[in-house]
Length: 122
Image 1 (tube, rainbow, N blue to C red):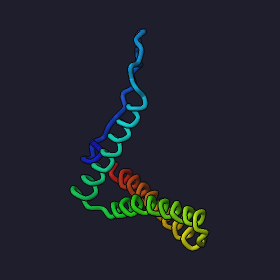
Image 2: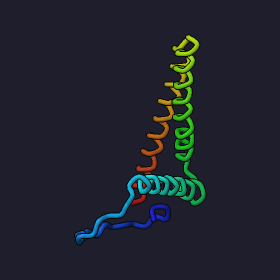
Image 3: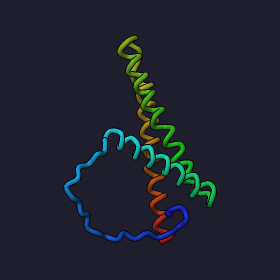
């Protein structure tokens, strides 16, 4: 509904439970719902900001999503080489941290622009 600009309203209603017991397996449930939310998030980005109306915030999301894992992997690699081979830590460590921090900033800016875009349309 968000993609096509529909407004949604929450209608409160009381929950009534009997004496039944839940049969939900929370480990599987959390993984299933997390995957569903992630796939819907990517579908919303693709549909709303690429297909329907192109918006440059998609670049912030893409680069943010790519740079954070690269920075973390680079940091792990740097620490691994420092511990096993005694290689220099500073330059690789700083570059990895910088990559991760810039990626986080890009992702946060993308979220900010996404929220501003929603507030503008209301």
